[in-house]
Amino acid sequence: MKYELVAGFETHIELATKTKIFCGCTTRFGGEPNSHCCPVCIGLPGTLPKLNRQAVRYAIMAGLATHGEIAKISKMDRKNYCYPDLPKAYQISQLYAPLSIGGYVELSNGRKIRLHHIHIEEDAGKLIHRHGDTYVDYNRGGVPLIEIVSEPDIRSIDEAREYVEKLQQVMRYIGISDCKMQEGSMRCDVNISVRPEGTEKLGTRTEIKNMNSINNIARAMEYEFERQVDLIESGGKVVQETLRYDDATNTTSPMRSKEDAHDYRYFRDPDLVTINVSREEVEEIRASLPELPADKCRRYIDELGIPEKDAQLLTKYRKISEYFDAAREGVKSPKTVSNFIIGQIFRRTETESDKEVFDVSVTPEQLNELVKLLDSGKIRNNLAKSTLEKMLDSGKGALEFISESDMGGLDEETMITLCRQAIEENKKAVEDYRGGKEKALKALLGNVMKNSRGKADAAAAEAKLKEMIG
Amino acid sequence: MVTREDVENIALLSKLFVPEEELDGLTQSMQEIIDFADTINNAPTSGEAFDNINNLSNVFREDEVVESYSSEEILKNAPEQAENHFLVRNRE
Image 1 (cartoon, chains in turn red, cyan):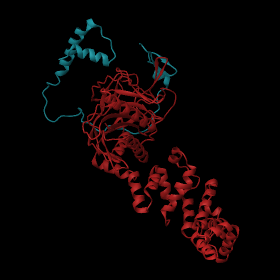
Image 2: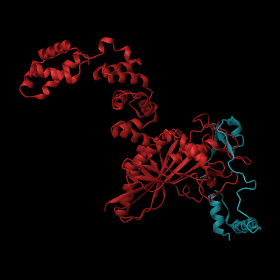
Image 3: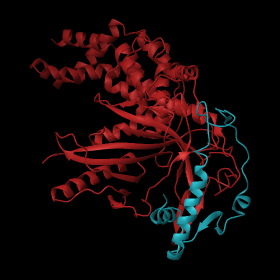
């Protein structure tokens, strides 16, 4: 029998506020253990939490960017559990009235992964287990998080991968989080079940935790999918439980039942008052959002004629799209600018993190100038390409490398000289061409282009060559 | 109605050990606490439900960093500590 994978995600994202959610301690990563703490975030009795306005704003931005409905009335609840990472023995979170309801993330195959809601909550402290003892650092305790809860709409590992990438992309675009999985500012728990293909009823699900990269998520899901299918095929039953992924062995194993004994006894936090979000405020925040990557990508395709694949590359990171937008200002063919970026510039920003930062030695204005020289016919494509390489090496502008004599096309006489030279030097190619091998002309053409230092117009040179040897 | 099982469960969730002989007494006490709290449910009220007595909403702070305490001060009341961390011993 063939089985279908069904998965839903709970994604925690640390918000890029300067301070914690309920106190003024810094959210800066690192620092001496327990040096970013105060009586509020270590949960001393008698302290009073006060909600960070910016955390609420960021969460509303996240809701709007994923097409959610912002609740008019939202409240904070206590989620009770006793574990050393929570000094109060409860986490302040939202259950009954979260900030953003519904929404979706659209995948490239057109499927929409629906979101159940987005809520805000405080992060827990960090535990280091050593020699059987536990060392607790509360620097991270109280850092604001949003939790994005999806419906079980994901049907394949590829969809899961894309879902996480899209969330990451959107949240980085709107600037509410750096979403670094390795540093823990983005963390995913996956609920996964299987069912025979073509059936509707959901199978029993397990929850996988502890994955710190998109590749790990994919591997853990693959493993868990196989495990569940094998279990069912051999007559067993999937037990609802929480699993921990171990990337060293690429396996999942159940967490101890004690850790999994959930009875959170949620109730309204009496220390925190209701959050009312006015419709004016929602509209003001909506208007302040930058153009979202999906909209931008669509616009590049529809309005600028950029191929879809290229448009996706240009919009993957906000910095790249901003660079492209500045460099294409007033040029005839945005596609040319896109080609320079995706071709030559991407070769110098090889890694994903390089692309995200997109710190390029050539400014968008300098690239713009180069492309305009090309637009006006003053230089040819080959010269533009080699000039861009020199610009990238030195950070200098195009005119540093292009002399007056390089500009403008070749005069007839030079063209004939160059063609004659090419014919002299490539007797074999000439013979081949005359013998019917059309392709042989390429060698001659290449020779002309090279000797003209890219100044020759390829079409004109080809015509001239044909005329001379035809 | 509070049962012995409720008390056992709450003890487990709170990581407390309750000796068998204390269970009945605790069940009784807990029932009394809940009955006491229930008097509030029976209080005569009128008008709309309210959120808090001052009818407050939207109490926020601005996102401005305030100096944190030193780790020495934070750890002052820790039962045990090591290398600037709170230390939780494994009791198993």
